[in-house]
Length: 323
Image (cartoon, rainbow, N blue to C red; front, side, top):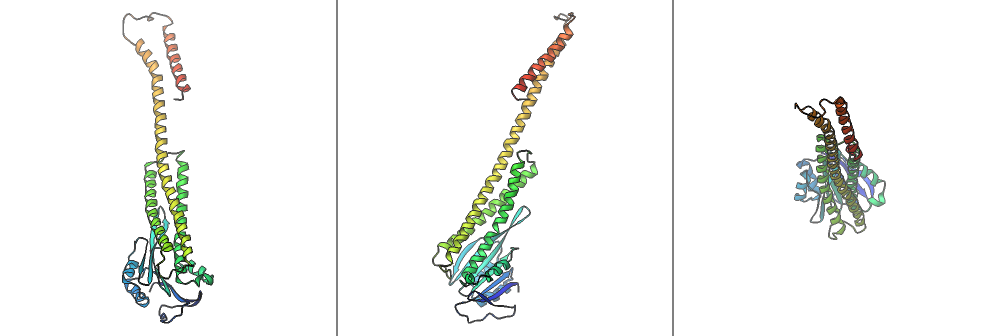
């Protein structure tokens, strides 16, 4: 059984940690609740938990299927939430899924593809019994907050790479491989932003829906904090999309400017070389009667004309910034 944790709490304090073979008590008072964490269970393994807590079969089916989009649903007196996780693996944003069942006396989380276990959340909450005393709805908040906080290291890492690339493009143009990589990063950002947007809808529904079961008014403001965090992550992802577009546009403009400089330089040197070419072409004509053919200073005059004319054209192009 892939149960990562199974614990019984009363008034926010740990009563005992349940083993794989321990039965979950049928009778519990209002202050009791159970927190079960599962990692990629099989259908048979989750079916036993579903029977014990009376989980809705449609919710169980969604919890078993990986790659579900974030959503929140109500099944009778239970709340079912699917949250998307994010983890940066190289240049790829690996998305996972955490399904959470919320009832009066229990919260069951089912993780798929997420490398970040909830051990840290559980340890922190057990040091805050006054918070944990709110019940399973506060655990739901803590798990969602932990998932959303995991978005920011991903955003920070991508942002650092793009800002470094944005600075380097001013000095060195991007090659074809770097441009393809940049387009790939932009695709990852767009895909991740879509997931974050859906998470914002989930947090917003929990904040504003008054008919969601087992979400106390005292805990509801905490979910507004999650909504704020998701909105900030979405805003930063929008900025990263703008940065990628800016880098691509800047690289194109700089490449056009470099090509323009090269074109002007080639045109200037071609004009300079046209001067001796024209003079040599004239004096190289094989005609019998041409002026200055018998002139003693003709050769020095031709050289002076060539170098003087070339120097004058060179100075002109240098003056206007083409060379």
